Length: 392
Image 1 (tube, helix red, strand yellow):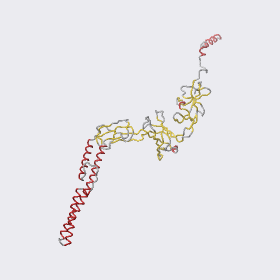
Image 2 (image 1 turned 45 degrees about the horizontal axis):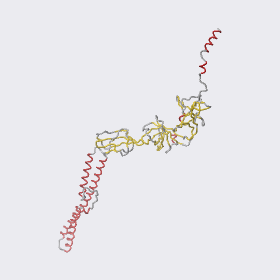
Image 3 (image 1 turned 30 degrees about the vertical axis):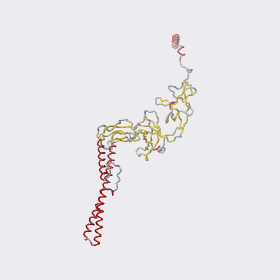
Image 4 (image 1 turned 90 degrees about the vertical axis):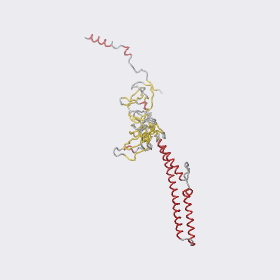
């Protein structure tokens, strides 16, 4: 039995040659070169984190002011428009005829006042018009006859009845003179009316063109070429894309810290950029149902943001508050656990951390490491215990 065990022992040792044992890794392997950053306490600011929705700063519907058939439309969904740009055109022939009709009526009104039909000055001297001059001549004659008859009656030359006839003729002439003045004034009023009708006809002709009321992007096209549109019918919806409004609700417990003018850091899903905004409007009341304060911030848009997107925002309530921070590139996330890699005694050491807010290239560390620690930037697949060499 002893011989058999000895043979087995010898056989087992022969399965692991010396060359194999010599090839196992040891601590003499070359150290990996890494770059590090010092954990520092910096002014990171105190913030209130809220969720909200991005909305268009302005949204409007471009409509036709006058009825007509749509002749052309130059924009469609997603088209960028500028304020004052012609985006649609109605048929103009009917409105051109109305302008010609109003011009003819104006010329007729001017002619009845003794003015040239194609002039632009509508001022007239009432006493110099033919109607008033004619009435004035009759009145002057009747006045002279009345005065002459009165003298003759006083001298006893003619009977009283002749004076009465002359006096009646005078009163009729005076009434006709007053009627002539009123007629001229009516014609002046009619001339002003015809002038207004011409201006209105020209304005309606100009209104056959539909202009963009603001800078923005077409959200929806609501009319097609050949369609007859009533006055006020919508043509396109336009939204203003820059800046955008961030509408968010702040819990009542944090509402007293939020004020107009505070900065806001905004992030959206699928976009790594951080957008900067500013609180511009606050609701005067806290909602009874939700106990939330509605706030609005203006956020500049670089073209990547869209109205209606869900957004996360940090309202900076105290810019001077200090926080422990590390470069965001130093944080490694694996299986939902965030960690950093420290350098201690020439070796890597993994440390789980709890992160807070992010501000561009820096991240707040709530727990896990201390100020002064050296963390590896861009650690990649570096593992705890691996030898490292710090390089500048």
